[in-house]
Structures are given as structure tokens and as C-alpha cells.
Length: 100
Image 1 (spheres, rainbow, N blue to C red):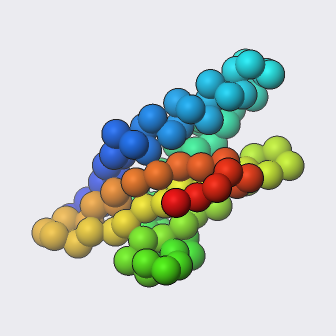
Image 2 (cartoon, rainbow, N blue to C red):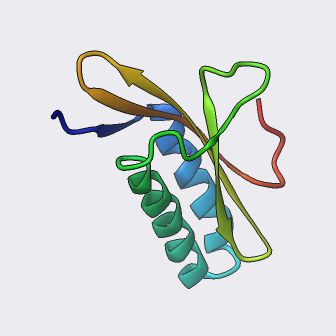
Image 3 (tube, rainbow, N blue to C red):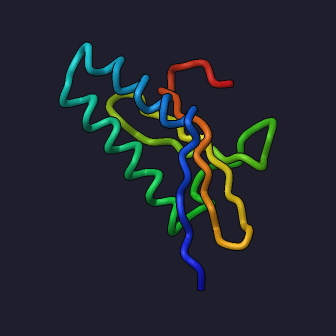
């Protein structure tokens, strides 16, 4: 049985940094915890790749909600099966941001 792996796109990596920078201005500890929560949620996809809900209007992507504080974050990802399972994380948003 092959191992699943995670790949973060450059855009997704930049999204995490953007979210973290926003929080750093208010609370450094919260910024560190938020980034850790996002990464930990992504790691759960290795064993449960269908954990997120199918995205609309494009169901080949999935959205995983990451609870954090009063709101949270959303990870958009796609599961690719060729030949090993690859979870490609394409975007990360704060739950109150406009998502495209």
C-alpha cells in the first residue's frame, strides 16, 4: 500500500503567511497557533482525504474547515490518485474572507 503525501501550492503557502501576518499585528502567540492549526488539519488529510466537503461549483476540490477562535480557516484541496495519493492544497482563507 502506498503512502499519501501533501503538496502545498505556492499560493496556499502564501495564503498561510498572509493569514499569519494579519494575526501577528494583534497577537503573536495566536498567529503561531493559527498556522499550527492549519498545518495539523492538513496532516489529518493524509489518513482521511475525503474529510472536507465537496466544493461548489467545482466538486473535484474539497473544503476543510479548520476551527480556530470564534471563526476559523478554510483549506481548499484536491485529491489526486496517480499512482500514489497526493493531497494538493491549493488555497487557505480565513473563514470571513471572500473565497475565489
